[in-house]
Length: 143
Image (cartoon, rainbow, N blue to C red):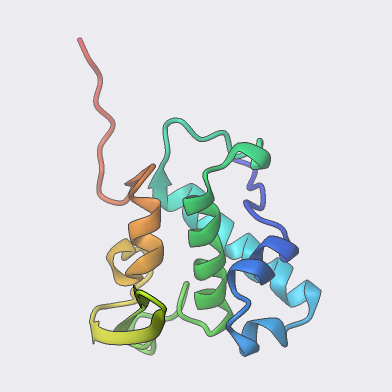
């Protein structure tokens, strides 16, 4: 299976504009993290109606999730060692009420073990709109 990067550096920069650590990375570093995030998505999720080679038509939610997974990879949480990875799950949420906007970050229990797709909160939620986790699933054959 050939892995096609799901997003470009420019798209990742747009999704992650609020993360100074991401923006400070060099383009080759960003490319490596985007590749790892794309690999994580394409091998860890089953997305029946998604053609990974047609990056123009990949749903925005998947592209956004890819950027967030690339950010996780940039800090060592995407493919981190299970015994050394940060075990907190962080979720960032923008709450709007009229003209007031509050940016909240929540930390809770979770695990970032390799192959544990339940550990990333927001990007996992975005992926689940179009896909199902491929970990622990079995192929079914209709007879």
